[in-house]
Amino acid sequence: MTDHHRSVFKARPLAAFALAALGVLFAWTAAAGPQVGEPAPPFAVADTAGKTWNLADLKGRKVILEWTNDGCPYVRKHYGSGNMQALQREAAAAGYVWLSVISSAPGSQGHVTPAQADALTAEHKAAPAAVLLDPAGTMGRAYGAKTTPHLFVIDPAGILVYMGGIDDRATSDPADIPGARNYVRLAMADLDAGRPLAHPVTKPYGCSVKY
Image (cartoon, rainbow, N blue to C red; front, side, top):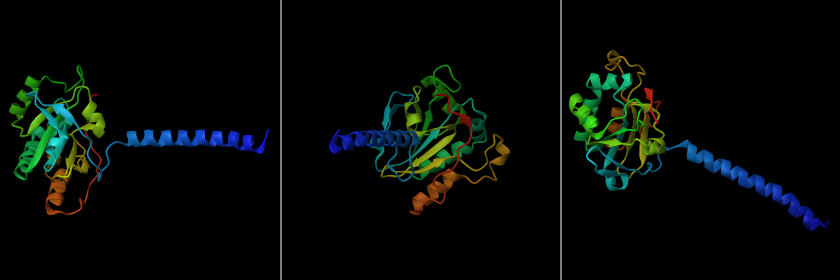
């Protein structure tokens, strides 16, 4: 065997190793999910009225995404107390588009029909711009939504600037709300003031999203 052939045989395993390493890197990047400071994952999802909401159409607007599940005690904590609705109204007054997202699969806790979702919105006197129905979990997985609630804030340029919990009291007890640090409210204040967010990523808490 010539020196040339020996070098080729040696190079092949190295090339195979390099390709395998790149594959692992790409797989890890895809699994890592959305990153603060990067463009928010695109979506095109229908609401309870059948209207499709497309992130590209919201360019120039501030957006808040809230994953929800009415059967979850952590969600009930914030809706039963009126805390989530108050935050939705604050956000709307500040020019945000608030979209509630239901990613519960058919047959699982939290899955609802459009009519049932609208009835819950009315019952809770909630104030999202729309409730998006994501029964296949496509949007939820794209955002890496883990819990209900799990919240994301997107700036007018379409950049994800916050993802995490609603606050720092990871309980289902409404009595903990008054003393909690509301991360979403702080994110809105920082974004609207043109400041870097003090808490761009926090740990979400609640029930697991029922994919």
